[in-house]
Length: 185
Image (tube, rainbow, N blue to C red):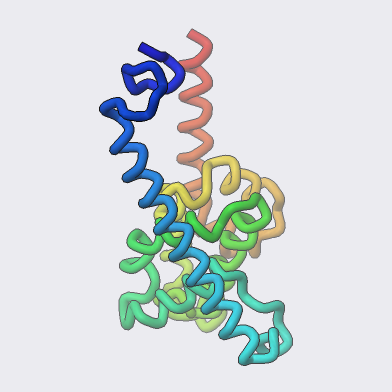
């Protein structure tokens, strides 16, 4: 049995795990194709608008997907739709920069009320949804603990966003220090 290939054969490719590997490969290819389609649609939308939205930097494909989900979410906004979008987001959010931009984009959407719950600046209840949205992105493996902690530690977040995300950040820090203590045993 070959330990490297884990199929229980001599690596010839016909072992019991070969079919599972092909199915997983097709699923990954489908996710990549779906991500490319989303990215192409987002770029097409940006091109129609002249590459900019009201003088702002154009949305990344991930943020365009979030904005579309928030619009389709109706009164519930983004939160009920976000768990189902995590797979598509993982496909388009690939770099550290993408993850930082996504977190900042979610903060911006909450701030202007696009995520549902009312705009923070207008005294809406939108700020209560920020930690929940970030937690869904974390649970959906779109962003990792290190990205959220780096965002919090950078100090660039608006004061309301840092305060709204504080319980999540505290929980992540406690979980990290708990796992560090477990590792040292």
